[in-house]
Length: 329
Image (tube, rainbow, N blue to C red; front, side, top):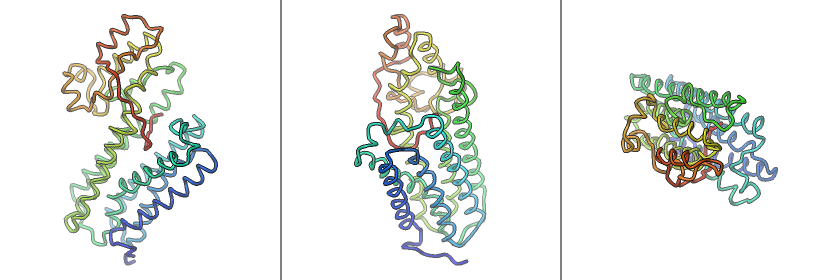
């Protein structure tokens, strides 16, 4: 089946138009009904739509195209289903939208950002599916598959572990510290970043014939920027950590866990705890904006515990709330 060229040979324009239309429809439904059960789910579904659309339009089913498309479908089916279950069955709503759900412009701002997120992050798959001629699979493809696979393990494992942990009566006020959470505080974020670096690596062998493909590096870079500086880590760290410090005992427990556990780079706890602070910041993404607030412990805490908290590097946090993917259960 020959390729169908729509607007441009790389399918960048048609996928942008489809994304805008799909997200506008989602916004209209969500705003009219005043609920947000479809917000994150519509993002994951949009990814699937773009992948399948470009594969069909391309008219070729080279192994590389099948692999990158199937990889996207697998990760987005998990993400969409998990987030829909979390909002529908566990929470009943998405607290991120409490202050904007009834304000049209503010709420629409989330959907505009979601348009950008979906389109940019889909670029490697869109580009690969648009190429009628594909080089044979090579070692770099399998490196990409391995990176993607590791990312999928971290994301699915991290989400599932935290979901099970939260359902335990003993978990109230605590952060998970076993399994994947033993060597990193947010394995799901690590996984999401690795997924898109792996997909980009799989797409890279096609760039030699068409250097335009290098624009798809925006996919993993944008994902990292979102999760490290916008809606991921800043929403889960900084001032948000006070939920683990409601009592002196819980505060000491969490401060000890945080001191020996890397944010997103997997590091054995004993090694991480011994690293100098500057090494943690430069090589392990332990940025100052993630630090514990100096006044993190609640009023019923004693002075000794507060002093211990400050000993773990507590400083006033710069906490910003974003409006993109969050898979914190």
